[in-house]
Image (cartoon, rainbow, N blue to C red; front, side, top):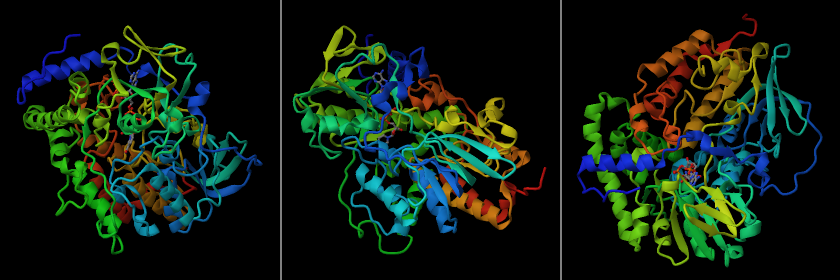
Length: 600
Ligand code: NDP
C-alpha cells in the first residue's frame, strides 16, 4: 500500500486522511477472532514456570467465612480490608504458586509499572513501606503484594496452584460451595471474585504456531531457565541466539531494550507502533515523596486520581506524564462528561491531539538514526486510541546493529509460523527463540468468560441470568439472585489508569458490606429495583464515544476495530466521583444491598 508523505504539522485534514489509511491497513475482517487463548492446548504457554514442584495435599471439605477467587491485588486487598474489619477465616484461592496476580505472572525482563509506585502500590500507609523508585520494578511490586498478605495473615488459609472450577449457592446452609481442580469442595459464607482483567494470555490465531521447533513462550510466562538472567537482565542464554519478539504494546516496549542488550540478534515484529513518551525514572527517598506523616500515601493517590479523573486539584504531587497530560487528556478522552456536542468537542480536541502526537513522532525522529526504521516506529492515530507507553530505552535500542524492526502492518501481523521461524510477506525469518508479547484477553475473567460457572439462587447460572438483558448489578459488585457474592472489576463500577486504587476502594466497600451483613444477620443481595436504579444512574449521562473508537486504529480499546458499543459499562463521571458516591452511599443507603434471609 502506498502511504502518503507525512502531513505538515497543523494540516488537520491531511492528518485525518493519514490516520484513516493507517487504520485501514490494520483492520482485519476476523477482528477479535484473530486470537486464540494460550490455554492447556498450548502447554508451554500456559504452564506456571515459577511455582516449582507443587506439593500434594488432601482435598478440603471445611468451612470458611470468605472465599476469595484470585490472589492478585484485588483479592489481597479484599482479604486485607476484611481482616481489618475482624473477619477471621479468609481463604484466597489462587492459580499461581503465590500472591501477586499480574505481578506473579509477568516477570519479563525490564518489567516496571508505568504508574508512579507511590500511588500504585496499595496500603503503603498501613505497611510503612516506601517504594525506592518513582516507577517500581515488577519484583518490588510482587514482594509488596506478599508483604500485605503477610501483614494481614492471608497466607494462613490460602490455597495456591489451585483453580476454582465452580461456585454454587446452597440455600439450605446459606453458603457457597466452592469446588476446585484439586478436589476441594468447601463452604464459604461470602465469595469475592477477583479474577483480574488481564489474566488470560492470548496468542495470534495463525497457521503453524504449534510447528515451531525452537524455543517459544509468552511474556507472562518468561522462561529464565532458557534465557538465563533475571528481570533486571543478564540473559546469557541468549548471547548467540536469534530471538523474535511479536508485539510492541506496553510489554514489548519494556522487553525490547533488555533483549537488545543480551541477545545475539533481535527481530521485533511490529504491527502497530505504540506511542512512547518520556519515562524519566529515578530513585526516590521518603523525603522526596513527603512520606513523613500518617496518610501521606492516601493523600498522594487521591491527588493523582483527582487529576487523571479530570477534577481540579490545588497541586500536582506526582507530576509525571499522566498528570501533565491530564489537561490534554481531559480534552482527548471521549469519556469525559463535558464532551457534549461532537463537533464542538472535535474542534477543540483535534488540534490538541495533533500537537501531542506530533511531539511523540518528533521524539522518534530525533532518536532513531535509520530513516526507514524511524518512519515505521511513528504512531499514526489519535492519542487516546491506544494505551500510551513510556520508555527512555526503547527507541535507542533500534540504533543497535543487533536489532531489526520488521513492520507487519501490510500483512495484518505475522502471517505464519514455521518449524524454523516466522514468515512476513515474502520473507522468512529464521529464529532460535520466538517470544509472544501479544497481551491478554482484556476484561475476560473466569466469571465473565464462563470458564468459572457461578450458580446462584435456584441454580441459576450468572451468565444465563445476564444473557438476555446484559449484566445487572449494584455498583458492579453485587447482583440479585446471587446472595453474598461480590464481584471485583471495572464492570458497572469505575476504572482508572491507577487500577489498584480502584480495587482498594472496592475492597474497603466490600469489607463494609460484609460487616453490615454480619451485624444485621442479613444477606448481601440487592433487589431488582435497586439494580434498575443503578443501571439508570449509569445510563443517564453515559457518554457517546462510539464514534471516537470507530475511527481508531484497531486494538482492544475498540474490539479490534469493530467499534465499542455505547452503554452503561462504567460510572460516567469518573473514578474520583464514583468513590465519593460510594462513601456517601455507605453512610446512608447500606440497606439497599442487604436482604433479610427470611425474605421471599
Ligand atoms: P497488548 O495487547 O497491549 O499488545 C499486544 C501486541 O501484540 C500489540 O502490539 C499487537 O499489535 C501485537 N500483536 C498481536 N497480534 C499480532 C500479530 N498477529 N502479529 C504481530 N503483532 C501482533 O499487550 P501487552 O502485554 O503489551 O499489554 C497488556 C496490558 O498490560 C495492557 O493493558 C498494558 O497497558 C498493560 N501493561 C501495563 C504495564 C504497566 O506498567 N502498567 C506494563 C505492561 C503492560 P496491534 O497493536 O496491532 O494489535
